[in-house]
Length: 263
Length: 258
Image (cartoon, rainbow over all chains, first blue to last red; front, side, top):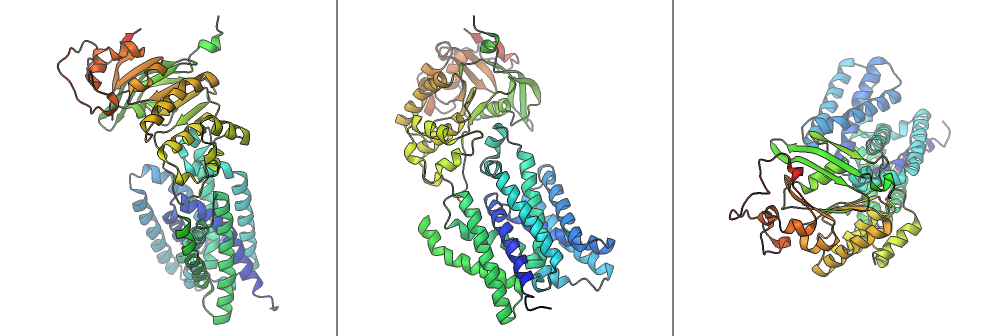
């Protein structure tokens, strides 16, 4: 171990915040918070299959989230259930099945706490590499399809009449979200992933005049929360993931006066 | 002689049928829209006007019937209502930039044309009803449409603004050379600007030039003789003859009053 052992966790957190902020803005605009939660819970099922099949755990995690995300899209349209009912069933159903299956494998290498609450300090360079790949891909694709994605978010109907590929764009957003959520698990844990999507975006709203500003500010406040959280975690030996979320929460609370002034 | 593309229909619908569960909303609707034509659909609330437009735009799939659109037809659509989420910060210019193919100059042109250039950098959440309607119209016009579709364009606009907005429509038609298909509650306000009126009550009650439609018994049945249609509640009068409006008639398109 060198004395730069803190570098990987910090890098992982910063990379995550950089994609979670912009994606979280879309989650807030499209009211998809529960959807993000469902992907996070379902990701545990991916872990379980990874353990059962001896697949690379990160690969299994991402694949699990992607399959769930892609299945959820048509299910929302055809199941005849209200969206929040469907998501509630899938979200907690997959979490429970994942927990049961995981216990059945009897694999002692699996540390459930690490998945539920994150294990940022134990993160390895491969996971950071995954995050680098995912974040780069997310930011590039968001930039390339920015106007399309924004048009679909503001009004799917107008976007469709204007000839934008609405279904493909929604799928793209869902896939990016699934990747980010899957990789966020190690950083903040299944139970707190949604916080990294929503809190920085909500903070950014108070200062932004355009959607672009909101996504950038969300990324910035997310990164700041990671820096503060990791520092606090080192200093007071608190768990890293929750410390990051607490920092994000404090930043949000600080934005509140500005928010009420702006509206 | 006008060339073939000048006179061939932009959009043609035949025998459109649409039901929500057991309720028949559109019953055997046929219509033809030609370049440069202004067609107004009128009818009481809940008679399928918006559904018809959504079918024609391809947003709803009818249970029966055919819709032929000219290939590559550019449509500018102004929806009846578009509620923007306050959680997204957005300026008027930012909103207009979302129109596919819109550039900076075109946005400025239409902002100016619709007299809302002062709103460009304002938040969309701070606009009045009338201002927002004009912004929506600008977004539709930015498509440089061959067909402009307006669903109740004067909703939430004060009376003075309504007349101004309606006066604008034939001007815009002439400037763009586009056809216009619009829904209106109030035939009197749009009459001078309309080439053809479709009176809708699930099926097409009557259609034709505004003058002939306002004299049509079916129109009078729906709207009453001396009421201002825009404020008229839907009252079924039974004291006149039903020669035009036979509610069991399926060949509704047959009522022409040219």
